[in-house]
Image 1 (cartoon, helix red, strand yellow):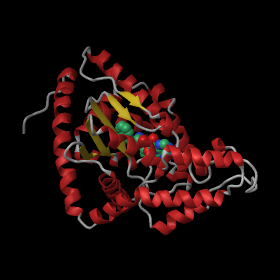
Image 2: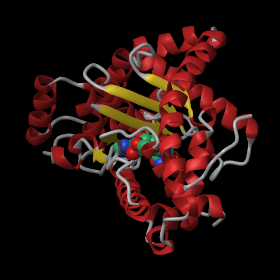
Image 3: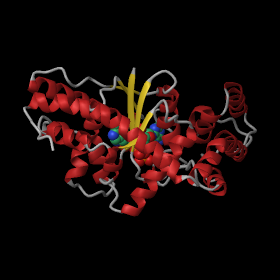
Image 4: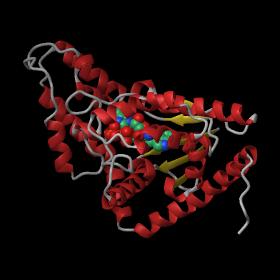
Length: 325
Ligand code: ADP
Ligand code: TRP
């Protein structure tokens, strides 16, 4: 089955990105035909700093490869390397009702956070629909916050096929793993780079330790029983620990006598051992930028083949002829 997903290079990668998106995506490559890309144009809607976009693009590329994306199996590319995507974006814009975009929570949230309400931010879901529809995937694995964007892509797919009386574009389905739909940050809200509450994946170990040790907890005294369902330290620990260890901590919470400091220490230990090998690979790969460039160029070639074929069909359906030059 064909699968596609993307991540914007708009900040440093964190545990929410890893458990909510990258890990489940990488697991899918064993059995599926996966296309994963770095959404460089989407990042421009929130960042106007070329140096930072370049730096974060490299971080996403190195991060995916270090975490186990296999570029022989998976087509891994930058959105900017497939210019057909922006061509399709315009065509899809012409069948996208304004009301569909006006209802989008992500636009409203970003404007509320202080981003400029420019056209790129408003039209963001049309670009995302083009990313998806051009590759014709059956599934799009994402975190919960992206569900509405995938539903918009479904609506746009239907509108296009209806408008041009064809079956060219294929309906994509979101694939959301409920158990990792919303990873909490150090303050208990959804972990996000915009809330300054993230534990980064590839920062110096000291910095990660400091972040974990400063996690917000309630003020229940050490000796009192605690509710294991209400602690964000335990919520993160569950992601790393095996089932026996998780059960053991849950019992200790209910019994009382366990302090949050002890759980935080164990969480940091797990962070360091579980992510250790990927963090080491990240450092090794950073010393070989030419190897990463080669991988992205190969991914771009494979993605463009698929995109060019969809665009041939789309242009024909729309009556758009282009000159052979
Ligand atoms: P951020 O919220 O930090 O800006 P992005 O929006 O760039 O992160 O997210 C990239 C991917 O990671 C998306 O698929 C998103 O659903 C997933 N993701 C981000 N944060 C979380 C989280 N806290 N829990 C689950 N998934 C997340
Ligand atoms: N909007 C997604 C995010 O913020 C990134 C993205 C862009 C994406 N294009 C996509 C995700 C296509 C899935 C499919 O995380």
